[in-house]
Image (cartoon, rainbow, N blue to C red; front, side, top):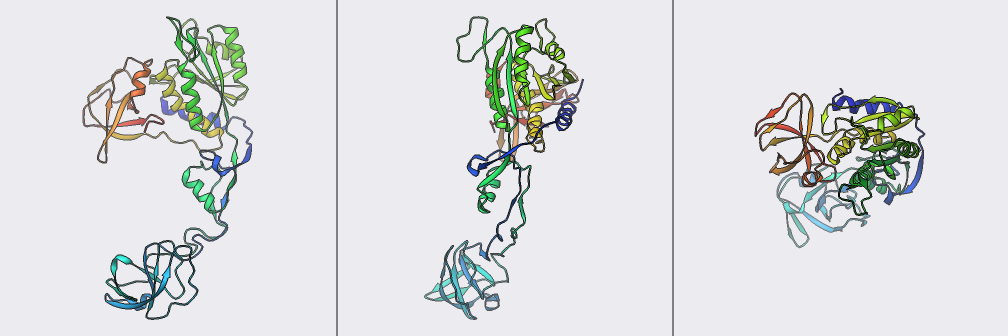
Length: 404
C-alpha cells in the first residue's frame, strides 16, 4: 500500500500526463484573485518611474552634508506627486515627502528625525551619503521586463503589481470543472429533515467549498443510492467534468459499489488504498481521460484525503505547479500514542506562544466526528516511525484549510 507522499506524487504524475485542453479568457482584474495567469504581465514603464524618496526629510547634495553639523538653506517643499523644476544648487536643500520625486541636483535624502530647523536654515545632525533613502528609477523593474510569469496564481500582491502596470484586464486559465457526487442509502440532502437512521449530506458541502477554495469550478450532482444502476448513471454524468470526486462507497462492504461501477465503465486504477488513517480506502483512477477520486464517506476522512490528493490534481489541471502541503513544525503539548505502520492525521489545535507553535491532539470519536474537526484548526501528523511521541518533541502539523 502506498504512503501518502507516494500516492500524492502518483496523482501529480497522472494528472500531468492526462490529455487536457488548455483554454483561457480575459477577465477584469477585480475578478482575478486565485486564478492562474495565462499570459505574461510586463512593465509598461520603468519602476519606479523616477528617483523616489523613501523617507520624509530633506533632499540634499551629499557633498554639502558630508559631516554632522552642516547647515543648508531650505528653498521649498516637495510632496508625492508634486513637481520641482528648478535645480537645487550647492548650499541648498528641499524638504521632501515619502514617495516624491527627488529633485535635480540632489543625490541623497536625510531623514527629518536627524535635522533641526530654524526658519529656512536646516542643521543636519548626521552625515549624508550618495543614494541615502532614494530608490533609483528602474531599480524595481525596467520598461518591458517581465513582472508576472504565466502559470502564476494571482494573489493580492500579484494583482497589485498588475494594476500598477496598467494590466487591468488579465488573461487567465479557465478553471477545471470538478463534479461532486455523494453516495449512500442513508444520506439525504442537507436541507431536508433526516429520518432516525439517516444523515445529512455534509460531504457534498465540504467538498464543494474545498474545491472552490482550491480554484476549481464545481458541479453538484447530489447523492446516489447504493444501487449499481443509479450509481452508474450518476458517475456517467460526473465524467462530463474534468475531475469527479465521490464520497463514500469505497470500503470493503457489500454495498460499497464505487470501484465495481468504475471498473464496469473501464476505469484504470492507480491506487485503491493509502497507508493513512483516516482515509485508508481512498481510490484514484482515470476513466475516459478524466480523473476520478473515490474518497471515504466519513467526513474527517473525506477532508483529509481531499487535501492530500485532490488539490494537487486541481492545480495541475489549472495549468499551475502543484502547491506543496503546507506542513510546518510545532511542539507537542501532550503525549501521543498511535498503533500500526501507518501515517495518522489527527484533529488538533495549534496555538502560538510567542514565535513557537504548540499543538494538542483533540479527543475525537473517529473519522465520522465532524464536531471534533470543527474544533480543530489543523492535523497532527504522526508518521509510522514514531508511534509514541512525548510532550515537548517537535512534530509535523498540517493546518486545516481556511482555519489558520
